[in-house]
Figure: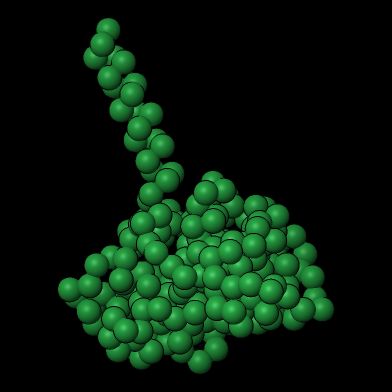
Amino acid sequence: MSVLWLLLGLLVLTGSSESSSWGCYGDIRTLHTPGASCGIGRRQGLSYCGVRASERLAEIDMPFLLRYRPVIRTVGQKYCVDPAVIAGVLSRQSHGSNVLANVDGVGDGVKMVQDPGLYAPTSWISEAQVSRVTEVLTVRIKEIQRRFPTWTPDQCLRGGLCAYAGGAGYIRSSQDLSCDFCNDVLARAKYFKRQGF
């Protein structure tokens, strides 16, 4: 009988750890980030910056991202990327589709072009679009892994996020791992992780 309880306990632990820490590119729960710059906070109408600003912006975007959570989880499993990171990128770029106008490649990074006067319909973000965003992120992370083979998974995730916004050439050393995009996305991702992404 005790063996049965032991097996059931292991199943519960496996199930809960899968949803809380899966992803091949670092564990966002252990990453420290300063959050959004004061410029990002001001542009979004906040009088503060840092993690508090990132979390507030993520909180505002949460209702829009909740409708895409199943798609984000499916894409996260496909690319082995924590869904909270995908949600963080979508929040940073499009406010969870609240102001999404188009998804397009611009320069070296992928940008979601925003139009503050356009409120997107509820079905605007498709699985293909979330996959494209996630694929570009994983390509950037893998580029960083090849260029810096001694870096930890956490450093490669940071590098991939900075390269996502600035292009692969943006990362020349570990000094470049604290870009505003990365800091803000990671703080938002940590918030979304606590909310069940």
